[in-house]
Image (cartoon, helix red, strand yellow):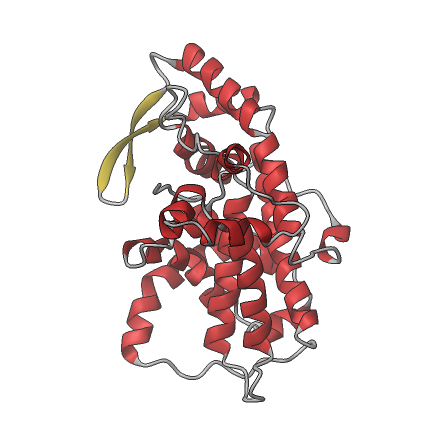
Length: 315
């Protein structure tokens, strides 16, 4: 199963919004510069081309896990142990995914980056990489279709629904000048549990799947003839939903995409904050000067990051 995530622009915007809500001390611990963090927000997606297990880290098919009889609730790691004990464990992991366990592992990776076990100085590059990956996986967990075996509507004759919900609809929302501010959720910052919050998020997302599928059926019937048009993406022209049809989609889904997106950014900030507290509230060292090759590799993503940061002033 290979699926896309929120999309490059939405993922980077998520990290920029999460950064904007952090206290000054935590920003300092992340290098006091959001640009590298935002630029690395899509590293996890890029690894899908080189790591055969990376795609499975981005989803968990809760419906198929239930059908398989996995024990998930008493001990959150018991389901993972069941998968790994199967004769073809690698194939099982690829089929069902491992997002909730990846989220916990990524959380503790960030804690260890801030507080190395060998008492060495923290490596700010590793801190930024770990924080960016944790934020990426958290963003994916908030997408309903990252929690279902019917991830692209292939079981219900609705192929393309994955990109519609998490890429086209979000990019349309981000392009709107009247985009509302995210509702304040101060309690979230103090209530991230690295074991149980991932499962809470996945249950929330999975509960939205029937509504998303039903909305897409209605959307197709209303916008079947004029719902798509060509638009430029990079150097190519691609067939994509029109702005009008995306407004219809937003209405059919009761506008739930933007609140879900906001909640994702707020939980990303909460996870970074919680990991920082668990690491002992450290202050990170300055980022060492990068080689010219490293600077070149980051140049284009950072230009994107700078643009997103300028356009994400709303909390």
